[in-house]
Length: 310
Image 1 (cartoon, rainbow, N blue to C red):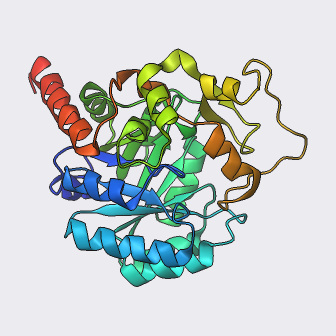
Image 2 (tube, rainbow, N blue to C red):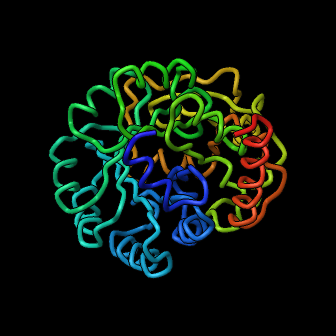
């Protein structure tokens, strides 16, 4: 385990960080996650305005004490709110900032100088090396099966490749939804498991009732990888694609389509009406408060450790 991993682990009930989910993650969900013993997180773009983001971060900080939480900033040039949202993140000295969809060394340095830990998500070893060169504090390995913008590589291969040279904080994402999965992530060499889709069915998530029910009712075989909705490969629920009148077996990316991740336009519509989830949703059997799910996760983690005598 990395030194930073040890420091964070000492503050947590479980070696878990919640993934920031576009639209779905809310301030209430972050608060519930943190107070149940994991690192909660939320995309900066989920509040409809920068002013609301300011209010949400203030409320999170007031309700979680010294527990670590994270805000996700999309560093891609299409994010028209990046500069304004960054000012809010700096103002509140957010403990952890997760950067996504672009590598920006100046942004990393600015955040670190202000006291934030900076994590960057990657889908390949070469991306991880670029992030390490920028001096990030943590690397999030997004492997095959992850919800949202997914990776193409097995968690076994991706973790091993990165751990060959990276001895810093490593988080692993990709279909992790059980305590056994959390322990497996640690066994592979990750400091923390990175869990997103399992929280989609939680009461605090900003997901429609039909979306929550799909998370409960469906499993890995009901997930489809497509790049035609947001411009990059992402995992979506097959039933939600069908409900929108599309054939999940005949999806094509529009010529010239680019990433649109600023909270508006076609991208927002896609994530609102065609729902994303990872392959681990088969473990979710009910829609419940986040604390209930994390309590179950802790029990399953304890059982997994006991089963192998650790």
